[in-house]
Figure 1 (cartoon, rainbow, N blue to C red):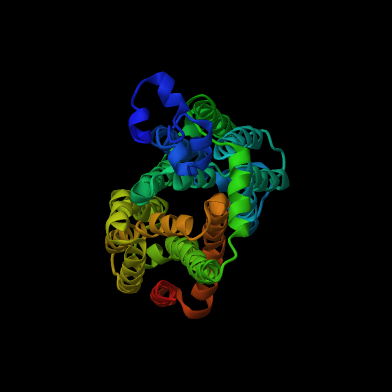
Figure 2 (cartoon, helix red, strand yellow):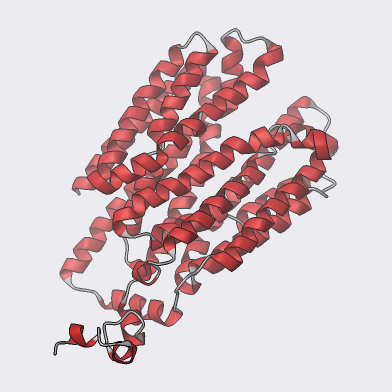
Length: 435
């Protein structure tokens, strides 16, 4: 009787079969995704919830951040604006710096410990923000939140490395939808909670929400991770020094560089107009009494558009290939940027921002899918960490570039420059695909 037949003769014979999933020798030979095949859907659900709650907590301070800065002793209007921008961007800067480190540690010690570390760290820091006494303490804690946190980044590493190859785009799209929903809902909650429980109480509530995500991560997320197996795979990858492997590795470097640049451009394009969008809407004739509310609606439209298409475009990347989706979305987003410079009513800008969000949504899941497969499995976490770092770098650099262009060349120029950069990035992606 052949070996596969022997494996069907009962539990006793099954344990002796070398290809059985429960055999130690066979488990060691399976990839990380194969070992976690029965866990990835449940882990995805927890990661979506955790990304949603953490990003709600991080973004809900937007409506009242200037008020909190003023409470901390900053008097002049210009200083309030300056410190508010510094405090808000500090978290993204911290995440951009440490995301590659946490990704590398995820490869060495497992994805779940990184999720738990991020959730617990962010829950503690978010609560501490509610007891600060100076604006410097606020900025420092926002920076620490980025350095030790990054639940969404850790979720991308887990989902991106656990989901089957043929479902990775869809899974990352679902995860992206949860994160986008958090960024959309956060400011809405932040506009309501301070009236009920005060500004400091709002931070305590945010910490409590993240603590719930931490508990779910600890008790619900499952991971089959064996450091010895990972070390063995890294050793095998190191020994792969044939000419073919070297050629593939060189090609991957070109692909990786293109993916990192594209990831940065996604957030840069979305955030480039944020510093001046209120001023731009005011120039469209919106009364000052309604300016903040209308600006909030317009800002939310891009996230809403992305929520509608992220999962669908991720699934499309699984069917037709990630590069096709990336190039198509870059070109479409670049084209949608241009008409935003010619709007005459705020609702026209809102509609175009929603269209932009719909086209942008296909980029991050497709980029993460390709990034996962551009390196050896033992370096997946590190690669996805670099990808997260590039994204957050775009989130930090985008408002700076947009503000400088708006001052130097006029508000309309921001849309032209950003659109041109996106189309140029599509050319870079086409080159990387053929290289």
